[in-house]
Length: 193
Image (cartoon, rainbow, N blue to C red; front, side, top):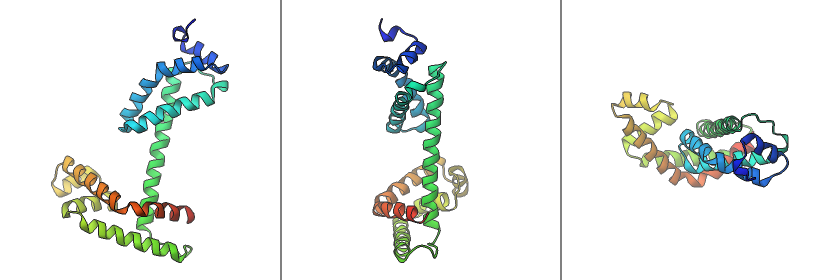
């Protein structure tokens, strides 16, 4: 009998016995829906694809211990947990970078870190000066004063779309102009904890 004709529960039972065919059938049956869900949540097609793949990799790795009554619900819930973990790690990374940029080095950091911090701060300020006035103002309000797009829109009397445009323009410009410092930031953060 073809695996495609089996129920999810039957496929999971076969999967516990290392059936690659059962795994392939589950993958073909559920991957696209999970990809679409991840894409809708993340708004990033490549990341959504990676998440769906990661979910099935974990399914294969845990195949012998699976106790699943509803495969669709299990996969959807697992995907949501992966997405939450991903978003949480992204936010933590942004917080670390923000902390690094806004916090001068402590006495426990060595001179090299102090020099790197000074160079990064100087480069950031120089890059910000190259932005058009409005773009720079929007960036500073959002990243340094932590205002939302709506709050900036109200304060500056611009549409939210205009604020989004200025933010994306500033982030792209700074990313391009400060890419050499990304490694220094990560190394300094890791070595200071």
